Each structure stands twice: as structure tokens, then as C-alpha cells.
Length: 436
Image (cartoon, rainbow, N blue to C red; front, top):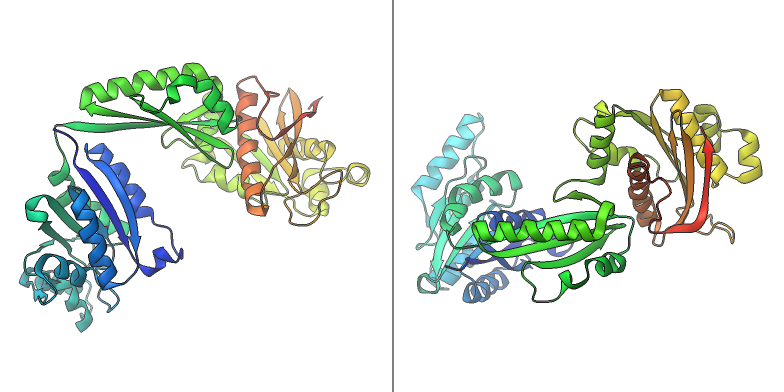
């Protein structure tokens, strides 16, 4: 039996206009793969009743199931109920009030000691041929219906993730799970090589039509190798792991993690294993590097803290950078990056320190140090300090983000004993090594 092919339809003007990110669609795609269903088309529609009904009809014609998220609130611009009614019961049909829905709303507001606004009763309405899906986490029940003479199931779920996810797990996953084919996936994340270079190492593994399939995507200097295997559950997972092993053998230590592992979490695990604390000294990244690190739960076990020394006076006062260094070489230089890293070591007692200083733009560049010029230094207590010059393309936000990623990559390679390994955007031999 082949996997059910499922469409994901996200509803809301705020999504179409890019005012908020659609996190539901990505979560649903991953959850569907885990239960052996095949994510198909993903579509976004604004708060337009006719457009929403057409989208449901189109997707139902080519999929075994459609999951709609959003548009189930109490206000007049929440139109998912009406659009579903037009589709399953006809344009002349009217929504009906569901007694169970009314009772749910009454209990919800009573439990919170609040009167129920009349507008919330809209959330107890459903198309005559649809059924309500219980929502213990919010006021909006979901909706379930059958389309295309039973060939397609349609589920309408609330937009808030804390309501949508439990409803999916309770009502949708049991209906779409199967004992047939599954889609097993893995993502191997690399840092230090460009996408084309990773592709060359993978070679014929990326041949179109190969099973399992292998592809790559790139973002902010991180190239992810994506492996997908389709088949019976055990066979698909076995084939997936075999291809993952081949990818690791081809690409090597530039692979830093798998699936949900971040670069910061991997560096943190390496530090914790060695019993080494990390400190940071930032200029051009303005705290972004520290934020990436502290995004990792439990990072206090291996991260001492950091300094954001954007102004030159702070570099001198907080990190001990010499005024002569700033005068003779400038804030954006090997010399300053090295002294910043040394200062972070001496002031925190950490065993490893990272520093960043550069020209993030859009102004401030020169012929010798154009916008995108960044120095990253890694200092090891009782060892050496390594400074490298990079040139990052992109706008200010991109330069700062790539700097934070490559700083963590430099820390990782230092911990691997490869501190001067060639990496993406490093400027050839533009490096310096000194004793701490």
C-alpha cells in the first residue's frame, strides 16, 4: 500500500503578506513523514472565502487528504468554516450550530471565570456534513469532512501551534498512518565548504532518480545534505542509514551534525566532553554569536559569557586591547581580533575564546577592508591564538549571521585539531598564529 499523499493549505492574509512566518506547514510536513504519509503540495491562501474553497477543491482532486490550518477564529475574517461548507454542502447550504461545540465553549470560559463573547459562538458552527474535532487547548474546534466520494479526507485545524499540533496527533495522525510505504529522511549539516564543493564530493550519490535520493540546500554558509528513502518501514530506514554512511565517508569532518542538531549545540557538546568553557568577544556581530550559543538549552555548562565591545573604548576597557593596536592596525585587523580573544580568556578564565571584528556595512568599508571583511580569532588557553580573515558577501544581516556561523565553525575545527583548515569565505593565507 502506498503512502497517503497529503496537501497542506495555510490560511491567512498575514501569511500571504509575509507579516508572520508559516511554521505550521513545515511542522506538519515533518510530522506526516514520521507517520508514513507523503507531504504533497503546500499552498497559502488569504482570508478570501471563494479562493479558499477553490484551493480546497483543487487540492482534494489530487491528494488523499488535505490539512487546512487557520481561519477558525471567532471574527468575521475567519472564513474556513464557510469555505468548507461551500465545498462539501454547496453554496446554498448554511452552517449549523453544534451542541457539543457550544458546550465546549461554555466550559472553556467558565473554567477561566470569564463571560463568553457572543462572537465566539461562531466557533461552534460547522457545515452540515462535517464533524467537529475537540480542542482541549483552545476555543476553536477543528473540522473534519470527506470529499471526492470518500477519496479525500479534509481536516481543518486551528492556526495557533499549541492547538494545532495536539489536534493533529489526536485526530489526523491516526487516520493517515499506514503500514505501507513510509518516507524516511535525514539531514546532514556541513560547514566550511560551498554547495558545489559538497556536491562534487557526493558525486553519483546525487544522481537524479537514485533511491534513496540525495540533494543539498545552502543557508548562511551551512550546506545540508538531505537524504530521502521511500519504501516499507524497515527497508526504507535501512537504506536511508546506508546512504547516510556513504555521505559521511565522502564528505568527512565538515559534517557537523544531523537533523535538528545546530552548530552551537555540537560545539557545546564537544566543549562539555572536554570540560572546557567558552568565552566570546564580539564587535561586528554585536551579541549575535552569544545569542546563538545561549539558544542551546544548558549552555551555561560550557559557556562562561561574553563581551560586546562595539566601541573601541570598550575594547580597551573591557578586553585590554591596546590603544596602540587600534591606532596602528585599526579595529578590523588580525592584531585586534587576537587581543580581543586573549582578553576574553584572561577576564573569564575560560579555556577557549572566540572574537569577531569586521565591517558589516552598508558603509564603513575601504579599498583595503571592503564591506564584508571580518577577522575571527580563536584562542586556546595554554596554546595558540589563531586569527583568520574572511570576506563575506551579502547585506549587513547576512554578513553578521555568516560571521557567527563561521566563528562557531572555527571553534569546532580548533577542537578537532584542525584550526587552520580551509573554509568557505576565508581569504587564502590571510591568517596569523601566535602564542596565547
